[in-house]
Image 1 (tube, rainbow, N blue to C red):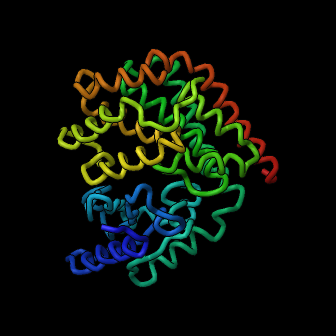
Image 2: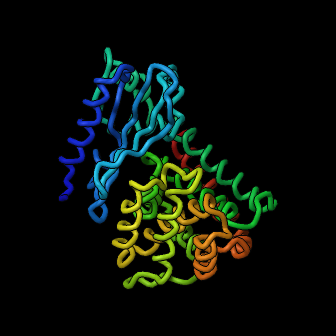
Image 3: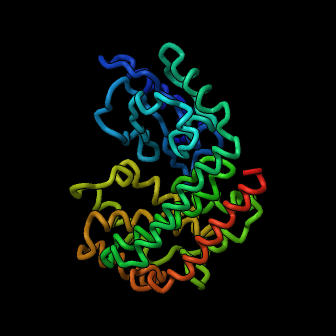
Length: 335
């Protein structure tokens, strides 16, 4: 099936129409994410991000619904109570951010969306609120470093996941100074521009070094570990406790994106691979066949747990740069 942005919007509206026939009618459903503000497709695959607001506690927090092999709905279910004090969400980079950065209401009850958005977003981009969205991410990244430094995590995929989340939070602290947080598939595609917007382009290179080490990735042919990664994503789909982000409808969403990006943007592809592979092995276990393949690949990439320990001093210096950037930005904006 040929996927276009127009078709994605129609898929979203079809879902909303179906929800209006349910006994518990939604308060609001609104569209967010890449479908609205950029080309949503990578390698012919896309997700459709929806926020489904309920008048009570939702039955699930998140669900993924297959539309076709290349497309799925990624739905966050949120209680209306979470929006009770809209102004407090001005410091929330995720729920607040994705209501203020070009969402589109597809269903609204009694102007709920209009009222909530106007209350939340009126002063959303003021420097005081912007820095309050960024600093907690930097603090969470520092806490991740402290966890790694103190060896509170067991060596293995869980330790590697702490490391990757630390990088993600550090980068998003910078990203939030000029827009919403960066999401998984476009994380390293868009971070260089966010770093340039705060006049710190070196932060992008530093992030790549923490992911790849001193060796440059070879562009062009796909790396030998790609089949092992794909097998892990397939194996985790049927495992107990499979993360919703790794469920079956998202398989091509990840694999086609990484395969397409690698020839020109290998570091952006690598982020997708190591982030999802590590999450899968956290579920499957390091002693599983997928876990053993993961260990071999991480050793090759310099991201094995014992190798991460050797990067903690560099990570410490990088987090210092993140914190310094936030301080400078705050001073320049009169805070």
